[in-house]
Length: 230
Picture 1: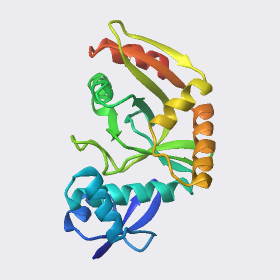
Picture 2: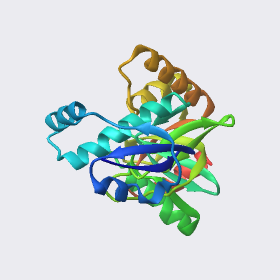
Picture 3: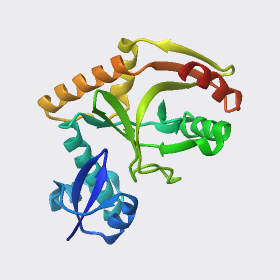
């Protein structure tokens, strides 16, 4: 068992890992000192391997991130299944069920803005309420393409993507956004933690503009989305 510390969402976490690949996976986020302890038991590992069929090193990454997200929830933070790109010091999120085209649309924004567009995280960013605003934060848990940066950027807007034949976008209400947020985050089992998550999701839905974006995989989709969301 080894331990190392990394910084995620402006918080220090000390991870206890059995596999050297885990520290290498977190290499961009390593920090000195100690932080919030994150560890798992042998029984948790056995259950994760049995449930997922994944090898232990991959199960370790899943277990540790799940526990990080649980600790983050106690500090006004949550994981959010989305692709997030930053432009001009503001973050824009694109969320939808897997395979809908989140990464494709984020790539259109990077194509549109060139070096001015920076990937925050392409799959599982952290969102944290701090200083009165939600910030989108990079993590190494970022999808198969490895697109992420160790940054925390104010979240300007979120688009809920739908495949469509014509590019269109419309603002949705906080009440419409709330179930979307809940479907794209990690739901805790404990009632007290679930209450905390519901309250945080409600604040997110009220504080950040949400849009419904029907889009094609064409560059025009980024133009339509950008005009409304920025």
